Image (tube, rainbow, N blue to C red; front, side, top):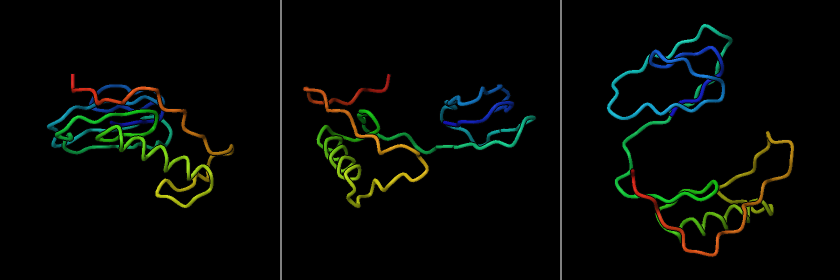
Length: 112
């Protein structure tokens, strides 16, 4: 996945500001260029996970329990505790609390 600023091209396609681009698997190279202002890009890659994952709000896990634990850790960090979530200092507002979990068990979605 790649996110770029305006005036930039990825693999021959123009990419609008703030867009995310899915490039697929099996690449050995990638052409990225700009005719615009300086840009920042974030490139994420790697082999796809072999198992299904579930995602809820900003949390990704292999099970309902893992997502519940991550939410609890985030809530502790929002409350000021030192956790692996850390503290966001570049955001001008207060830390965002995670919404309440739904009243059902979270299930992973398949790859479709």
